Length: 268
Image (cartoon, rainbow, N blue to C red; front, side, top):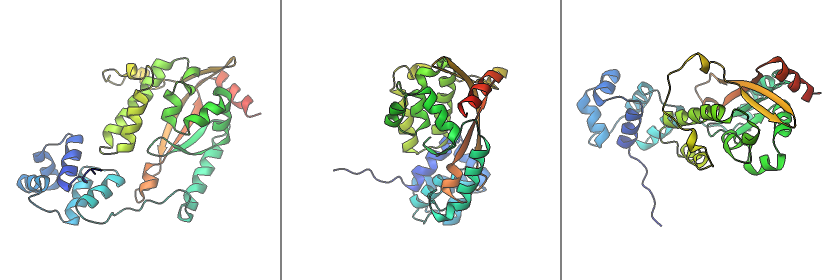
């Protein structure tokens, strides 16, 4: 069985340079190295030092996972740890996240990883899901925010303004894939949801931001119950661990008094 060779340092560097829309000359100027040397690094005629790899990764503003991958491609050990959220070293982080999730009650809040998997939720998120989707269907789809949004058996059937809301979520996923060059799992997730019926039709030419982009609530309806919500996304300011950098806290807020009343009533 044929195996795919790991990308060389030069290939990884060229991929990220083009992703960041930088020319060799532009990157060389930013990094304060000669264009000739940068060209030699990309073609493999020169081998970078560990310091040069970390310097170029910083200039390209790479995510920590990508910085580790770039170091590995050059034959060096990774610089940043990747600690599982359930490990003892993450006790304090979990405590903080649990506090934030609980403090957001009675409104939904979730913690997701880079692949849009839900890794922590508050009780309000569970109540909302149970009120707007068949739990057996949700279990079959899995705790992935993209799949729950776009899958025909997910929340899609309850979203009144599907084209508008789902189109914006799709654009966000596409931006993340573009920003994380080489993240095959995230790219595979995008490919998967684009195969769902009608999702590819949501793609459109990029539009300039406008006033209407400030707040586009998602309108959910099920069992004569209407809820309109918008969300905010926060990241953890701790750029020393891959897991921490990739986690994000997504909090959902009612977009009007009627929606707030419904969510509070669901909380009993």
